[in-house]
Image (cartoon, rainbow, N blue to C red; front, side):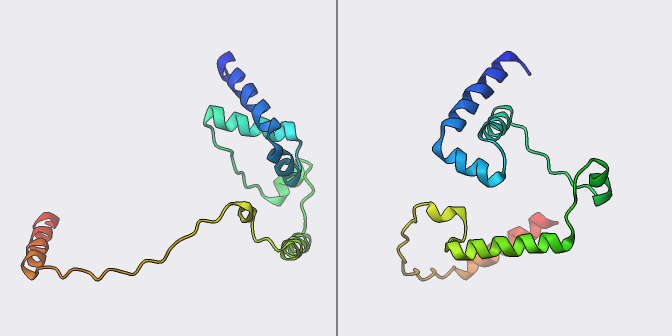
Amino acid sequence: MNADTQQQIETLRARVAADPRTKAIAKNLNISVQDYAGLVAHFKVTGEEPQFMVASDEVLRQHGVQVPSAKQVEGFLRAEKTVIEKSGRTSSFDDLPRVQVREQAATPATPVDPSLNDALKRSMKRNLR
């Protein structure tokens, strides 16, 4: 990585770390503010995409990862569901401003001239051959 790219990453990392929302996001992800800000800045500046890797439980264990049982995963998800239900929130998008949409009466469709409809069908048949 060249020095210019590294400087861009560091500048953006500092801005992300200073954002008041970053602390809450990092806490929810169980990583430090600096690590979170560094990841955001890296992916934004380089244009790289985070990798999602799938590994078998056996491979994870070989690398020292303690793999939760299906029962532990179920318990975690049920506990999270309870927390979400008690909070009254359905997602982190609940804090975003709502857009008011006015209902508009549907305008009736204008009838199509049957001769134009037939010409269109003939043209489509010719072009599909």
